[in-house]
Amino acid sequence: MTSLSPLLKQATPVVVDHASGSWIHATDGREYLDFTTGIGVTSTGHCHPRVVEAAREQTGRIIHAQYTTVMHKPLLELTDKLGAVLPSSLDSVFYANSGSEAVEAAIRLARMATGRPNIVVFQGGFHGRTVAAASLTTAGTRFSAGFAPLMSGVHMAPFPYAFRYGWDEDAAVEFALRELDYLLVSRVAPNDTAAFLIEPVLGDGGYLPTPPAFLEGLRERADRHGIKLILDEVQAGCGRTGRFWGHQFSSVVPDILVTAKGIASGFPISAIAAPVALMSKGWPGSQGGTYGGNAVAAAAGCATLDVIRDEELVENARLRGDQLADGLRVLQHKHPVIGNIRGLGLMQGLEFVTAAGDPDAATTTAVQQATTRHELLTLTCGPAGNVLRLIPALVVTEHEIDLGLERLALALADATN
Ligand code: PMP
Image (cartoon, rainbow, N blue to C red; front, side, top):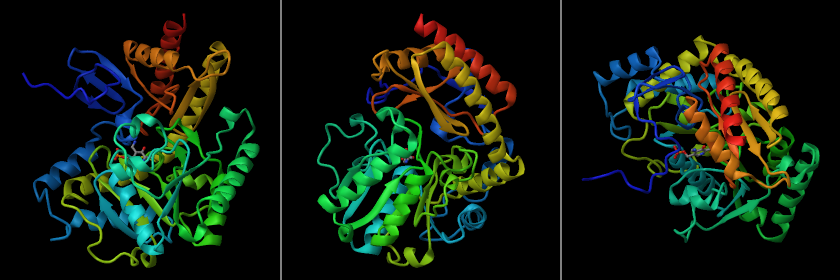
């Protein structure tokens, strides 16, 4: 009998029958409150009626209108709608299917535009699974071990990870910027450097918001040296942080913005946005793909952006995120194994540490598995696997956050007794 590949590692044994809003209904009849949203994808909740209808309607018109052959209405509309939420300087959009592909598109564009080879990434960043994207990923050796050689020209600088260093945020930012400057004089010449690539909130690398002062320091250095600043908004974008884009907590505007996941509520589509003058540094046909900018996915993307606007989901993410963070802090008082709680909006992480302050992956895994038993779906992350991440849908209600906190409290009690 054929089986699914053992290459897959599954966080839960749940088999879904159907899902709606914040809820997953399993084939065994159990009902799970979903604080994973398909790893931050189903932004408008599972099967939002307007997203379902838009996709259904488009499926009856044309499914695959290949965008290098014929253009289609949903992609033109999606581009207009993105224009309403993107920083105004990023007035040109290129579409792909996944986050990894879009990250690759951004890297290619930065290299083509500058004629420079090097990319500087920041420790703990996750940028995808393709070989090039994995080369840019430092969120865990599990994402690249065993299949070297990776893409060349990638250099890693420290991330201002205040909790890990036991410092306050200002000290961590000062340290990380000083180390970046040292990298730029010791190993990676600015004139050979195409881009800095960073997430506004480290996702798979541990749910760590990037301090605004660090982003501002990167922007200043990028401007000084003609280096492009690429912000990977794949996980932090589309309202998740309580702002439409994760970087909007700072004054920084990137040269290239990468988006995917939440943009289409579960349909595979991704994009990069940049000034048209920068996009023009690549030549027509230098990027593309068979499925990029799929018509059904684009229609779902249009409906998603409409729902986020009409239902004021960015504001809901902020309010419900504050409620969640408050509740988590109460749990932290009872469970000293939770060393640190951090996040923005509906992107919250709990870092578990031993009494000696070392990463406690065993407890993290035990808590994650216990949440499943209590019908709350959660995920772990972080290079050491010691961060529990909570990623509710942007439509999550006040009652659902309370319920999630109750179930998490039960799971913590189970796993730590
Ligand atoms: N960048 C970030 C910040 C991500 O979180 C992810 C996915 N977790 C990716 C890139 C890769 O996206 P995909 O899995 O769609 O290739």
